[in-house]
Image (spheres, rainbow, N blue to C red):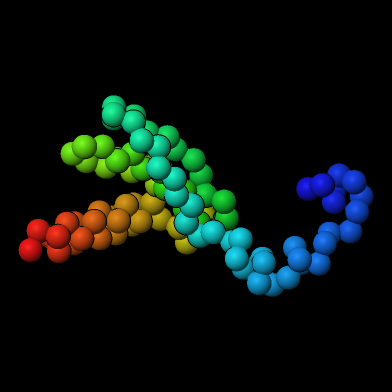
Length: 96
């Protein structure tokens, strides 16, 4: 951003394929702990990605998952179902 504002050439680091791939986040998550059933929500940072905010509480965890509406690949319902199934499997493993 600074290079653009100052009409400077973009430093080579930011053009490097490894850098570009390392900053492309299909899934962006963040914890927003609060004792009430409130939650935060934010969108993904890439066109086909997801934003997933979660609020861990004493007896449950609230999640809010969101893709861009224009996304042709990301599906919030499928993501939420897979997340739920995975968490249930993890719980079952811990209860053995």
